[in-house]
Amino acid sequence: MKKEKDMEKEDQETSAVEPLSPISQLFLSPTLYCVIIFTLGFKTRCNPSSIVEGIKNTWIKFPRFSCKLEMKKNGKAVWVPTTYEVEDHVIVPDIDYSNIENPDQFIEDYTSNIANTPMDMSKPLWEFHVLNIKTSNAESLCIGKLHHSLGDGMSLMSLLLAISRKTSDPEALPTTAATRKHVDSNDKDWWLVGRFWFMIRIIFTTVIELFKYCLTLCFMRDTKTPLKGKPGDRVQSRKVIHRIISLDDVKLVKNTMEMKVNDVLLGMTQAGLSRYLSRKYDEDTVAEKKKIRLRGTVIVNLRETTKIEDLANMMAKGSKSRWGNFVGIVIFPLWIRSEDDPLEYVQRAKSTMDIKKLSMESLICYGVIKFAMKMFGEKVVETLVKRIFDHTTLAFSNVMGPDEETSFFGHPMSYVAASALGGSQALIIHFVSYVNKIVINLAVDTTVIPDPYLLCDDLVESLNIIKLAALEKGVHKMEV
Image 1 (cartoon, one colour):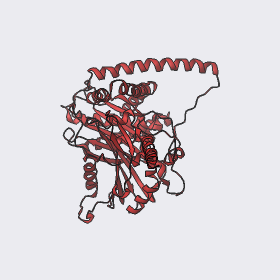
Image 2 (tube, one colour; image 1 turned 120 degrees about the vertical axis):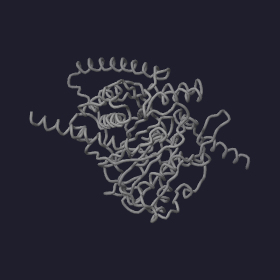
Image 3 (cartoon, one colour; image 1 turned 30 degrees about the vertical axis):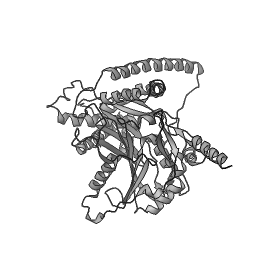
Image 4 (cartoon, rainbow, N blue to C red; image 1 turned 180 degrees about the horizontal axis):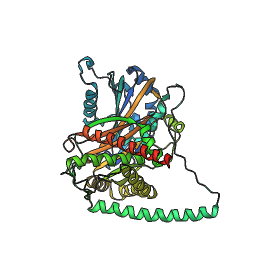
C-alpha cells in the first residue's frame, strides 16, 4: 500500500514538471543570461507585511513562481514545484535612511547592485526589496528582480496589473489602452483587391527583411561608435537609471503627426542618440550626414491582446492562459543624423516601423529559434542569437502600463520603472507608461558609456525639441 502511494506521489510530481520554452532556455545560457528589474514607486510608506500577505494570496498561486529550475541529464532545464517561505523572498534591508544625503542616487546604486548580483538558481527565481525611503518621485519603493525565464515583459506587466487594483475602486482591476483594428468592408470587391495587394506587400517585405537578417547574422555589423560595446560575453556590470517624462507631451506629437506612441518614442530615441553622438565625434561627423549604421534589437510581443480579467484568471488553478516568453526579435535601423527639422526623426521612425509591421520577421524569428532548438540544440541557437546582439548596438522595448491610478496591495503607485538586463549590448532602453507618465529606463555598460545621465538628458531634450516643432506645425495647420 505504501509503495502504491509513493508511486502515485512520484507520478504527480512528474506530471507537475514543466519544460521551458525555447526563448526561456536561451535566457539561462551563460552568454544570454537575463534578468528583469522593476521599481514600483509608492505615494505612501510601504508596509512589508501587506506585501508578504498580498504575494501569498495572489503571486505564488501562479505555478511558475512556486517552482525552481532543475537541469535534467539531457541538459534541458525544467520547472519543478518546490516549497519555500515567501518571507525569504521579500527583503527589507536594515538601512539607516537618515544618513543618506542623496536618496535618488542611493536607489540607483542599490538597484544596480541587485541587478548585477547573480540569482540563486536553487530556489524560485524572484525577489522583492522593500525600502521606506523618500525620493523625488515616491514616498517609498519596492524593487523587484525576476529571472527572464519566468516570462517576457508583457507577461510580467500583465501579472502586475492582474494583482493590482484601481485606487478609485479597490475591488476593480486596472485598465490599459487597447488597440482596436477596424476594417471598412462597405465595398467588398475593393476590399478583396486591397487584401490581395496587402498580402503581396507582406510577402515582399518579409523576404527583404529576412535577407537583411541573414546579412546581419553573417557579417553585417554596426558602425563602431561610442555606444557600441565589444563583441563577446555578456556585460558583467551595468548602471541602471531612469527618468520620468510626460505622456501628454508624447501624445501631443502623436496626434499632430498622426502616428503611434511607439513611433514617437523611437523618433525621440533617434534624435537623442544623434544628439549624444554629435558631441562625441570630431566636429560634425554626424552633422555632415556621414553614413553611420546603428541598429537596435526590438522585442516584439507575439500574443493577441488579452483581457486583464483573463490574466487575473492565470492565478486560478487549471488556467489555460498562455504564459512565458512568446516574443520575436526584430532588427530596427536607427536614423542617426543631425536634422534641421526635428520632426524628421519621428517621420522616419514611423516609416521604418510601418515596414516592420508589414513584415513577419518577428514571428518567423521565433519559429526558427524553436525549430533550431529542437534540431540542432541550444548551443547553436545561442551562437546565432549572440551574433545578432554582437552585430547591433542596443536593445529597445516599450511596455504599456495602466492608464489610471493603481494600487499594489493597498499601496497607491506613483510610477513604474522596468528594465531587462542581459546580452552583450552596451545600451538597453526601455519605456514603461503609467497613467500620464512615461519612464525612460537605461541600463548601460559604464565602461563603454561612462556618462549615462548625459545620454538621458539628450533623450529628454530631444522630446522637448520635437514637441515644440509639433506645436508650430499644429499652429500652422490651424492658420491654413
